[in-house]
Image (cartoon, rainbow, N blue to C red; front, top):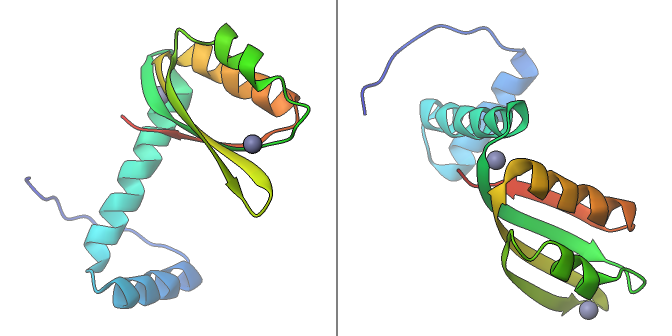
Length: 123
Ligand SMILES: [Zn+2]
Ligand SMILES: [Zn+2]
């Protein structure tokens, strides 16, 4: 990969934290900034326009959520899912692929039902 060097100015606290992370991970700062920027760009692209998306929904569900019905309603974008119990809580991972608006609707539906969710786009 061709590398390009450019100067940026950042808050000194963030710079100090970057130094700590670089030391802890035994990686150079450029690599860490590159990874962070790649994640930011993915996130931005994901939010900025309709696209064919793939990713995972990580969520903590509550027993009143009609999960089977939701899975059925969104079966065209749900590739697979995993349901585990961790310290008496239901933790689910849902693998999705398809129209980004459809995935956003699924996430909205889960939030509305009271689930705590994180969506991780992977593209
Ligand atoms: Zn996406
Ligand atoms: Zn459960």
